[in-house]
Image (tube, rainbow, N blue to C red; front, side, top):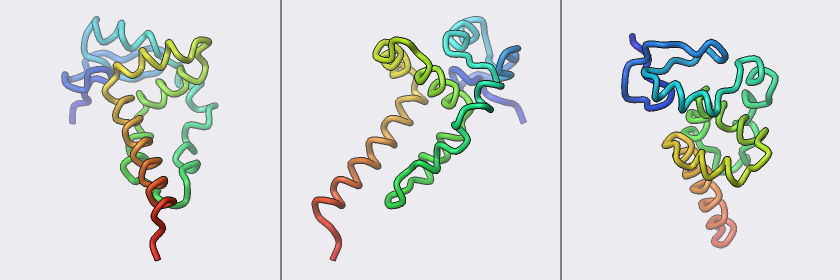
Amino acid sequence: MEDSCCVCSVETAKYRCPRCRLRYCSLECCTRHKEGCVPKEALRSSSMTGLSDVLPARGKSEELKEVLLNTHLQQLLVALDQAENKDQALKKYMQEPLFVEFADKCLSLVDAEEKENLFPKR
């Protein structure tokens, strides 16, 4: 089974990042990846592995948990957390389809919970 590129998710990954060991397909994807690359050790020391545990008890989303398992998304979240200018970093990451998917899933959970609070089931 061949791995797809951690950046574009379209092409077959041919190369591996020496810092984090994620795979990418081309020089362009390598350049984009390096902008947010976080060494594997930083991911291990972060609390990203338990991130799905912070979801509210009601409305837990298996889809969100699945997205959070993606190491590329974990790297983006760690880099965003460590960024000095979070607004600028967030604008940059909102160009990443994977990050947009994550944000949409988070917002849909919040929206569903707000509706439940407004119109509780009887």
